[in-house]
Length: 109
Image 1 (cartoon, helix red, strand yellow):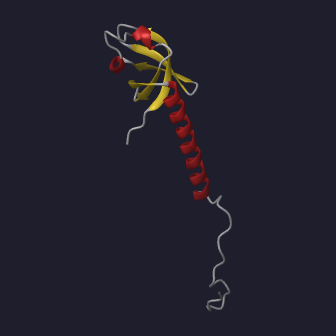
Image 2: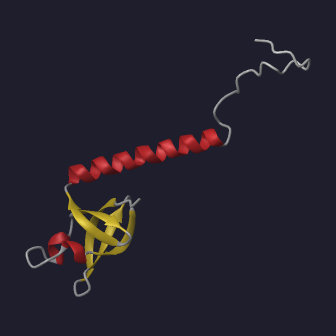
Image 3: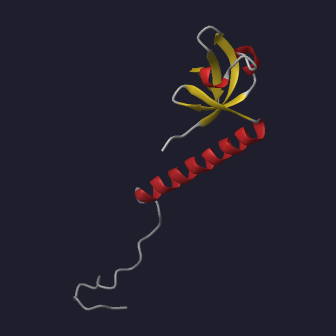
């Protein structure tokens, strides 16, 4: 499964090589924007744009509403992942009573 993360292009760092600085949730990285630029949409036109980032490449443009929606969903998934991890580590409350735990081998329901 592939996961693309929304990021906002904040600076073009190398026009010749189509490299840009993108902000992804406060973390800034250099990415390649070759897939989203052409003669009608040069690198300089990308500053401030939201893009879907995957393995260091901007794969497509996103509008800000879709970017925010995706970021919110990813945060929810992260919270759900943390809750599941806590449950796996035993943070999920007491176990139900064991009907055979009376040391006489007889079931007591």
